[in-house]
Structure formats: structure tokens, C-alpha cells
Image (cartoon, rainbow, N blue to C red; front, side):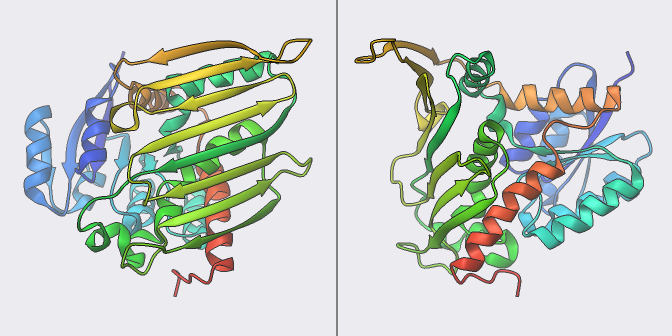
Length: 332
């Protein structure tokens, strides 16, 4: 089987995670980063070449796909350049700083007929895959609503990092962790037609939000109540799915977020205390590997990705609406 040759642009923590998660049948042959030393460090581990200029990677003929894991402000520029160079693209969320920016990428991908998958790796966590299995079986009954919380405690100097600069990031906590909760909620409930909420800065001395609250409703009334926060102080992931026949309670993502687990509260005919089953996943997170493996298969099969620009646009539309309603103008 011919190997899919891949280039990675952006060699920080996420770029490294992508590199080490590549499946058999693929090979990273080039890295690029504005910090050339960082690109060289990764390249040495993979017997690959390193560049400071990302266009050098896009020019390599043998490369079929490029993974873009840069700061938000350069995601679209690099993805468009890669597509025009004939490459498929794996693009980290949120895929762009705003909807208008993303729409230029969507148009380019359509013209050049290239595959673009967006990195919503939370769908591939073991607990989320188990939840999907239970929901799809019908055992939870018709879904009613979702309650989700996602947050971290940040760190000393957080307000001076790139995520606090709206030009680089496109926003604060809402555009950082928000897209994951929004995407997961729409994955289970469907497309949202009513979007309300607000973003606010409570603690950090920065021009972007450190907390956001969302109330999202589908045309048939299914509702997601979501909060993202970088004043959580102790990293937290909590995602509860409520059906007419029971509830799924997901918590933890491994590491500092705690052991990943899911508890199924199954309603009994007589109601009262539910029947309870819990699955825990203390093993290393394999979501990164599963997600990038699907991207490689997308390329081999010539198929549209199941998580792509459409899903990214839906999440960004929610983010943009709440920023606009909250008085944040990151596009000016």
C-alpha cells in the first residue's frame, strides 16, 4: 500500500501530537514553523526536512496532505495556499477567526475539489464514542437537552499569551474551548436555529472573554445549555445528555481533566432510583490517532470527511453571534 506523504505546518504542542498520532500507511516528510528550531526538533525525530517558510512544504510534490496547526490568524491563509498547491488539508479547530474568513476557504476547497477535515477530536474520545453508541441504539429514547461545561484554570501570565490577542485568536475562551462543546452538542441534537448567550471578561486583564454562556435550541426545541471558562481553577469537562428514558453523564478527558468516564442512568418502568452503569477509561487518550486515521482514509477513499468545514462553520456561527450580541467586535 502506497504511503500517504504528509507535511505539518505549526510545530507546537498540537503539531507534535498530530505527528506522533499518524497511522501506518502515512509518513510525515516535512515540517514548517516560524520558529525554525522547533521545526528542526520535530524533523529530527521523523527523519524529515524542516523549513521556516510554510510555502516550502506546500511546494513539495510528493506531499498529498498538509496538517495546519498554527495560531488562528494564519489557519485560513495556509489552508488556502495548501489547497491551491494541490494538497488535502487537516485543519485545527476553530478553522478560522470568523465566518467570513472561513467562507473564503470553503469556496476555495469547492473549486479545487480538495478534502478538508477539521480537528474536532473530542468526538473520538472513548466516552463520546460510547455515548454515540448508546444514543444510536435508541436506549436513551428521544433526546431532550444537553448540559455541558468545559474549562481550565489558565496559568500565570495567561493574559499575555497569544489567545489573549484578538487579532491572533479571533476571541477568547468562547472561540478556544467553545467550538468543542458546540460541535458535540449539535452532533447529538442537530443543527441549532436559536442562539442566545453572552461572553464576558471577569478576571483576566485582556481584551477578550474569559467566560461564555450559551443557550442553543434546535427547530424542534432540543436545547443545549453550555458554559466555557478559563477561570475554572481546576480543569473540568462535564457533558450530560438527557433522553426520555435516561441520562448519560460524561466527565474527564484524561490527564489534568481527570479520568475519562461515562455513567448511564437508565430509567426503570417504576421510575425511582435508576439502574446505573459506569465505564472508565484510564488508558492513554487515542482520539488523536483515530481522528487522523480517518483523515488518511478520507484521502484513500476520496470521500467527504464526516467532520469538516460545514461543522466548523456551524460552530463559528454560534461563536460569532454570541460575540456580536456581547459587544465584542474582533473583526474590526
